[in-house]
Image 1 (cartoon, rainbow, N blue to C red):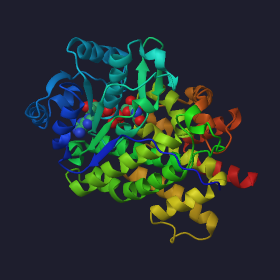
Image 2: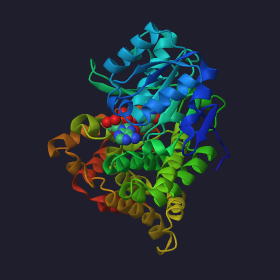
Image 3: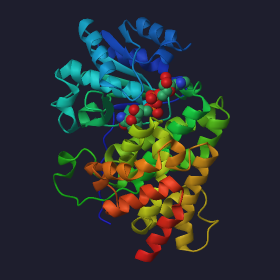
Image 4: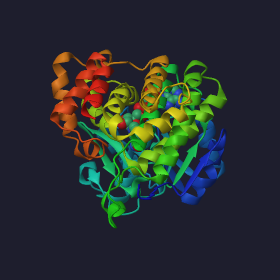
Length: 414
Ligand SMILES: NC(=O)c1ccc[n+]([C@@H]2O[C@H](COP(=O)([O-])OP(=O)(O)OC[C@H]3O[C@@H](n4cnc5c(N)ncnc54)[C@H](O)[C@@H]3O)[C@@H](O)[C@H]2O)c1
């Protein structure tokens, strides 16, 4: 394998319980007035007044937009931008889960460069630096605090879409696990499984030819040495901590393990990108209105089965990171033990095992596969070539819970 490594990251990443108190110092450096983008839940949480007081003590004036909405619809982004412009802010803080952080990212972009979100859809459309952006995640999580993408909903066009640019990477990421102690079990499971899916899809992603313009012509450049290292650390950590974080929500050690791992998973997919599970989640989420993390995680074991023949080494590495390598038999068994271990972990934390359980009707299966295939960037990043027939096979298997049909298919093909 050719040696190639590429990473994109915030200028500073701080991880540790209580580090939210560092916010004032960072915000002071960023400017005199900050726009906090958060949602009603966080604005009403007991930690919020301390965050505001910390900023005031650092001499930073604050404008609060506390109406960000799940999945970051443009209508909420517009209101955040309006407040930011009206109050003359010179930096933005995204405080919350992926929805609030993505709302903050696009708000910082529009306050800086003007225009509409649709001007920037796709890759590399952002013309230059955005105003200083700080992100403080309250779920563990999407990894948005370190990634070059914001995922938003365009209500007028009825689509979920992304804006990807290295300029959207927050300048500062402050990752304080104490902010996640209030996450209920379902949210902890879905957001933690989202992080696992980021790490696994990054580790199993396609590898691109190492051309001279690879990193300047694509935001997501495929599997590489940096993303592999981050992904494996993340998989190990999530394997160790997810179940306990879900079942013992006040266990700070597990919360810290999950926060650290989710940020690493964000760094992994922030350069490598994600693949088929995320492509299928776009129509699955639109059809079922279910949590993003639960959807990608439900799909992941099926996608891993499909990709197994081309990603044997990655599967052995995952099995090792999850501590199941020694338990299995020969190389085939060991590789498949990784998929079984991920599926078992997800089942233990309550992730639905089939898309039917997610609420997808049998009539929507063919439509889901067709729509997923249209998401070219993610389909191209899948390590094994996806065509109409194979995409339909994956979605049909996910609907009926028949993972073994994909395994048999892989065996027949070899
Ligand atoms: N930009 C990226 O890199 C990236 C990556 C993956 C996913 N995403 C996007 O992120 C969004 C999902 O984000 P999410 O899973 O973090 O959930 P979320 O931000 O949508 O929040 C879900 C719910 O959890 C609540 N919540 C958040 N923190 C909490 C806490 N500490 N305690 C109690 N409740 C809390 C929120 O108030 C909200 O009601 C989706 O829109 C998805 O597309 C973005």
